[in-house]
Length: 57
Image (cartoon, rainbow, N blue to C red):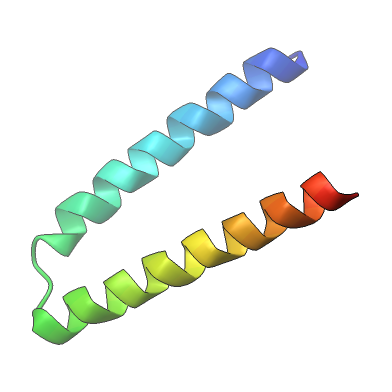
């Protein structure tokens, strides 16, 4: 398996996971939705920080 195939496989798995999370989120209570939102914000901030770090190195 070459790099491109591996990347595509990882992308497909992420998309499946996002779909599973979205379906699961439909059943969340108000506080669970809020906590999930905070988790997504935290994730986005870590990605942005990592991208900034990579740009600067």
